Structures are given as structure tokens and as C-alpha cells.
Image 1 (cartoon, rainbow, N blue to C red):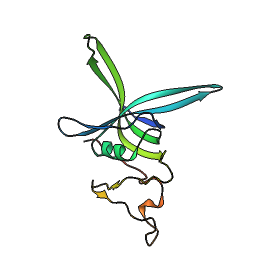
Image 2 (cartoon, helix red, strand yellow):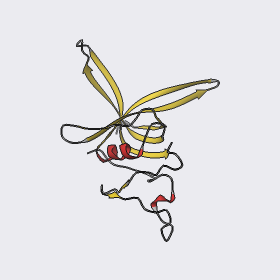
Image 3 (cartoon, rainbow, N blue to C red):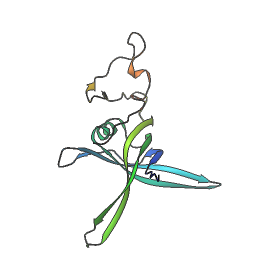
Length: 152
């Protein structure tokens, strides 16, 4: 049996300011550019990847990520066809992401992370780092380890 695979895994830095938008149906959408570097011998180049996040994952990306953060993003390639102002056909290929992990934040040492979003979508308010038991979710600088939200 023949199988197909359309999967993209990226580790890179967010190159633009994150802005959340909403579709006409109310679905959250974030478009981000992730930059990856390639080095061969003494030559280095950068590749810019258009990435789109939807629904709850888009909300999480807009809340926790900012320009300069290092992220892991996984998804599939999708090519869209559109027409420019002159009526010419144009094509755009992007990564439709369904998973994201914040690897390294450019957050300042005194800057607190924003409220955490639980997997059920409820917001968890910030708490002290000195909670009993030491299992505070703020024990780490990164407010979550992995997010795997499938776009609906």
C-alpha cells in the first residue's frame, strides 16, 4: 500500500511581532514567520517559513510567544492560490501548524509570563513561585512544555 506524508518540523526563531486575528466565523488565526539557519562549510543562509496557527493554538502562540523566541513548530505544507490587484495568479506556500513548543524565550529576567492557559481552555492566574511542595508550574521559565492542539 502506498502511503503519503506531508509533515514539516521546524526549530527556529519567530521573526515578526505576533498578532492574533479572527476569521468571520470567530476562529483565532496567527500568522508568524519562523526563521531557520543553514550552515555549510563557511557559508550560512537563512530560510523564512510562513506559519499559520489556528484556534486554541493560535491563542496560546499570541499569549506566550514574541519576536525572537525560539520555537519548535510542526505541521503540514499547504499551497494557496490567489490573485493580485492586476488579476495575475499568485501562489503562497505555508506551514499549517498543529503543534508548538516554546524552547527559549527572549523574556527579560524580571518580566513575568502571562496567565497560563489550561488544556481545557480555562485561564490559570499567576501564583507565587514559593508554593508548598515545589510543584508550581512556574518552577520553570517556560510556562508549558508541549502543546499539541489539533486545528478543528
